[in-house]
Amino acid sequence: MTDNEAAAPVEHRRDPTVKVNVQLPDKFNFEKPETWERWIRRFERYRIASGVVNNTQENQVNTLVFAMGDQCEDIIHARQIPETSYQGVKTALDQYFGLRKNVIAERAMFNKLKQGSHEAMDTYINRIYRASENCEYGDLRDELIRDRLVVGLPELSLLY
Image (cartoon, rainbow, N blue to C red; front, side, top):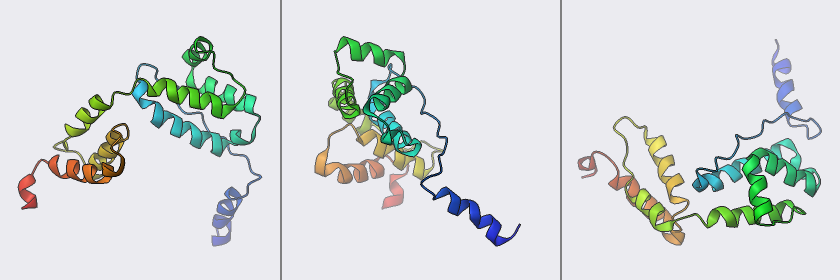
């Protein structure tokens, strides 16, 4: 294979007319509503990558409901959420799952984080960032992440 042959697929992938089959994210776990923000971010990436974002509002809503699973239907009907716009349904679900966020509990879990004895630093840092998402720290978030990172290290003596 020549260099030109190897480069061709890369250029082909940049062609906006080429459709890519993108797999739906896993169904939403309704037993863990605290994962909503993370799940919907993943779905938004799917929506863009698959081209669903360019479809009708009805199709976008149906794709979201299908991707989430049967319990989403129950929530939409019980709360009488109009299915006329994707953003409207998403906002209603944001509010529904946001009601279950307990900031005090989220902060307590964040403040208990410690690096595992065999945990890679990258993994530990990512875990801290994910845990801080629901703490509503505002402008203090970066400083508190830094502090948790340092305090959670197993060997504080290495810092002095």
